[in-house]
Amino acid sequence: MQTEIDPRNLIGRKAFDRNGVKIGTIDEIYLDDATGVPEWAAIRTGLFSRDAFVPLEPSRLVEGALYVPFERALIKEAPDFGVGRHLSPEQELQLYHHYGLDVAPPPTPPDRDFGRLAKPDGA
Image (cartoon, rainbow, N blue to C red; front, side, top):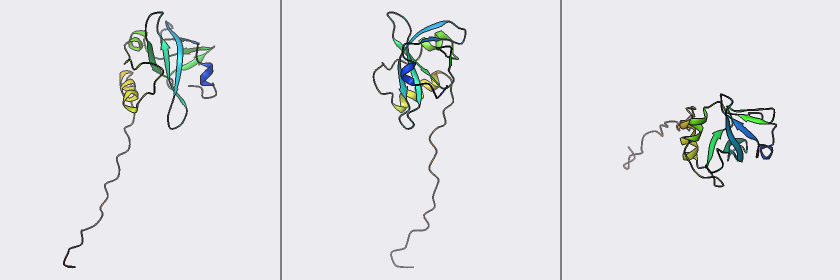
């Protein structure tokens, strides 16, 4: 995704799926907690339907519209966490899995050898 785009300028733009079919209109943008980089878009998928979360990273902005590399049906089936609330790391992981995107698990702490325990008799 183009990082020079102000995420506030994405709100209200149209979004299209991989086949050029209109998904809906961007309602909200969610930023990564650690980096502040725009990570998710909540797209209103219809007049009486809910918002669907789509990842911004594999998406692209072309002539003022967001093009998402997924089919509309998959987007509409995304887990519904409601908009206007914080996405937890677990919810984000569910969304990444839904879209088939690999996310590296947090690194495992190294196995440390702290040496032998001291014997109480000093031996």
